[in-house]
Image 1 (cartoon, one colour):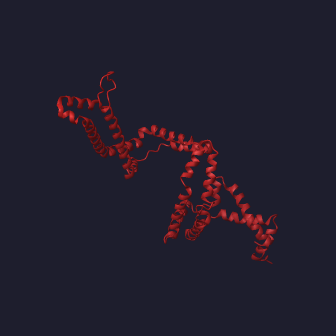
Image 2 (cartoon, rainbow, N blue to C red; image 1 turned 60 degrees about the vertical axis):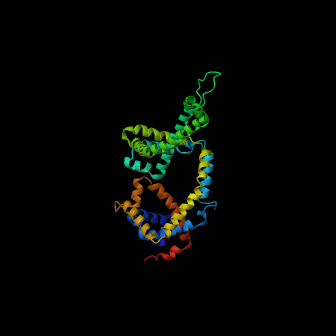
Image 3 (tube, rainbow, N blue to C red; image 1 turned 120 degrees about the vertical axis):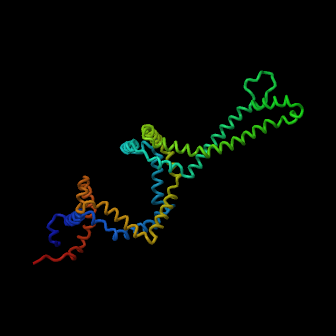
Length: 338
C-alpha cells in the first residue's frame, strides 16, 4: 500500500482505520493474549496506578469520589428498590429461587468455626440464666393472692418455707431468719449458673448439628427459599438515607487502602510476574477453545460486532487522522512502483 492508494478514497483516515481495525478483529483469540509479554506490562500498569496520588485515601479522587457520589445518590432514593433497575431485581429473585442447597458438612463447618461457637454458647448461657432469674423471682416474690390486712408472707415460696422452719425451730431459728431466704436464693443462682454452663457446653454441638440439618435439608427447600426471598424484600425496603449512612460507616476508603497495600505487596513480590503469567495463561487457554476463532467472529456470534466496530473505528480515526495530516505516513510508506 502507498499513500496514492489511500488518496483514491474519500477519507484516507477512515480507510487506514478500517484496515487496522479489521486486521485486529481477524486475529485469532489465542494470539491477542501473550502472557509472557502482557504480564510485565500489566504489573507495571497496576503499580503505577496504585502508587498514583488519586488512589490514596483523602485525595478527594478515586474511591473517595466514588463513595461520595454513591452516598449522594442513595440519599436521593426513597428505598433501595427504587435505586435498582427492575430487571436486576428480577434477576436477583430468580437467582434466590434457584434450588441450591449446600452440602451439610460444608454448612456445619461454616457455622461451627470457633468464634461462632463461642457466641452461640454465650447466647445460650445468657438465655438459660435469664430464665433462671425469672424462675427465682417467681419463687421469692410475695404471693399475689395474699389476703388484705394479713401480714405479708415475705419471700414467696422460699419465704413461706423459711417462715415455717423458723416457726418450728424456736428462738435459735428466729435469730438467723433474716438471712435464710437470701442465702437460699443466692445458692440457687450459683447452682443455676453452673448448671447452665454445663448444659450449654454439651448443647452447642447439638444445636449446630440441628441448624446445619435444617439449612441443608432438600425437603425444606420451599422454606429456605421463602427465608431468602424475605431477606431480599427487607433489603429492598431499606431507605436510601439509611444505606448512605451505613456506607459511610463502612469506611470504604479504609478498606480500599487495605486492598491497595495488599495488592502492592503482591506486585512487589519476587513471584508476582510468574504468578501473573500463570493467571493470563489460564485465561488464554480458557478463551482459545477453538484455535481458529477470531475476535470478530466471537463478537459477531454475540451480536456485538457492528456497534463495537463503529465505536472503535471512530477511536482509530482520532489517531490516524493527525498521522496522515502530518505526512509521517507518506514518509514511512514505500514510493509507488514503476
